[in-house]
Amino acid sequence: MEEGYPERLLLRMLEIYSPSGQEGEIGRFLAEEMGRLGYRVKTDSVGNVEGRIGSGRPKFLLCGHMDTVEGFLEVKRRGKVVFGRGAVDAKSPLAALICAGKRYVEEGGKGTVVALAVVDEEGKSRGMRHFISNLDEEFDFAIFGEPSSAYGVTVGYKGRLVFTVTIRTSPGHASAPRFFENAIYIGADLVGKLRGLDEEWERGGEDLFKSPSLCVTLFRGGTQDNTVPGICEVTADVRIPPGMSSKMLKERVQQLLEDFKKGREKAEISVEFKDENEPFEEDPGSPLVLFFLEAIREVGRREGKILRKSGTSDVNDFVRASGTHSVVYGPGNSKLDHTPMENVSIEEFYDSIEIIKCAMKRLDSLF
Image (spheres, one colour):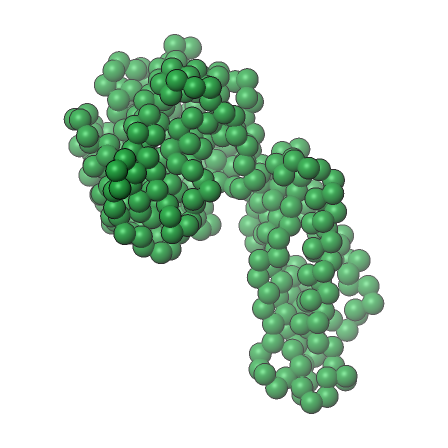
């Protein structure tokens, strides 16, 4: 790989605006670039781009996402820092994985490297779920590209459960509200109950990663400004810690709703569970984690940090389906995710490439 190529790759990726659902241009670009690097490339029916290099074991999956949240940001470099949408989440981690896989093979690393750039991670994980549904091989290790800083490795993500409660009543004229059940008022009462459940969970543990959380994220109601509302929808996002499951928290939500329905027989109250991911946690004593920490110590000249996050990513679905030993790693400060100040240090970006490569070389010594 020629000198300066990783930075040029990253800058071009940042220049291509690719919010969820609009990954076509960046997908074509990455397919061409991975082909130039020697990867055997294919693009699947949903737009995921897969590059494969090498053969045999160990078999590594290096997975990142091409899409970003909406909102183009001007791509610029100030000193040793690059700004742009996706600089943190997560084009720099994806670029680092692609380049590290190439360097690993160039320097004699054995086995198979599969670099996978997926679509829709910021949406409904359509790319990863399509990949999983067609998965017909086993990987020894997987590295997912998300910002952990180059000097930390993430071993845990909470799961996620999204549900919408719909409240229906008989609408009526707004001039006579006393004669009708107002669906919005019932919805507001439900929000209070859901907030109480979150506060109950919050009191149960100080560690955010180890306790569930609930956030009401959407509230919609009514149809006209002169009508007592006959419909209200309340959507909530629940995060699931390791040790719990989506099934457990579904049952808790359903019990809360059964209690809430009592005394409100004139209202029709139903719930739809719209999306779910199970929690993910890698053993911090596994060779994958320990070799990453050794690589951080060697390249970064500092002790690496083990991180656990309250969010959710594609790694959750992949590990649930495959059972593969996995970590999440990449340059950048995750506090800048989705903000207008997304930026990454070029030095940290280059360090992350070397750290990934060094961790992979340590892992191939096991085979």
